[in-house]
Image (cartoon, rainbow, N blue to C red; front, side, top):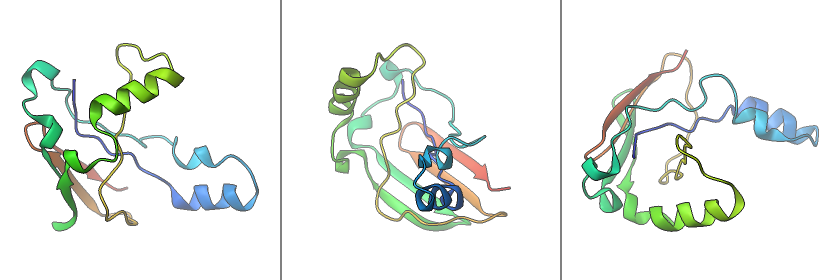
Length: 125
């Protein structure tokens, strides 16, 4: 299935770990780092391969593109990852993001969506 999700990064933690020469994955795996919306079964998702994708921060467009602009399409992504890991039911794969990555601060409201899959709203605490 498919869902709208956010793959968040705590740059402060990531940068601290990098400076110390330590693994910086802690900046990616913190509590609430990957919120997702409802999962839509693939059979009901429609034409996801060319769906529009967007993110607004406080009502302003930050990112807007199409899934077809990914470096690897969805099938290629699954194929490549399945060579490195055993993918089981319930595994989550985040595809990456269009240009426009930027910092968010407490109080920001993020609204992101993918055509045919709905939206996900995240309030930054």
